[in-house]
Image 1: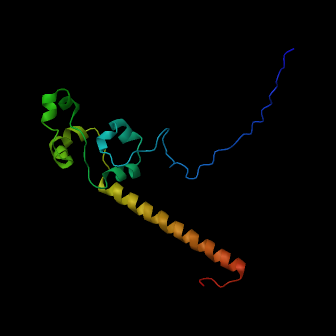
Image 2: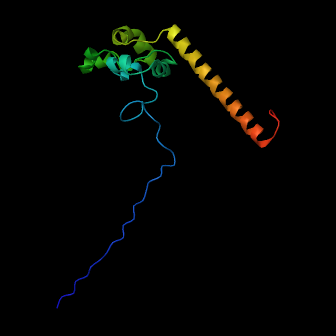
Image 3: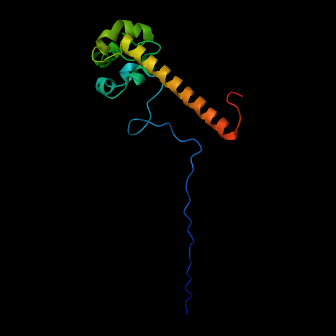
Length: 145
């Protein structure tokens, strides 16, 4: 005679709770990287997919490139002409050639962005003050105390 064991498994579904949800991204996939040069992005992505706010973030410390034009990366002899340059020297020497396809926000666009951010912050503060007043009124406390 053979003994047949029947094992019942109680499987309980568990939910994973994220303590710190990931930073939301407007793009499918990973969030945008920090501290990269403009030429990290393809001209098409930079010009058509990034917002002025995104672009402003990447040029806040200046407009810099990370690599020279592609034709200067094909041989070691070419690489030796630029490999020791600082980002400032790289941008000064090759920036015009690399950045010609990129649309960089102008001063007017950056000022408009700054004005919009300040306006949103003021609206947020006003809404918070309004909520505080409503709560104080509901509790029967004088506003501002």
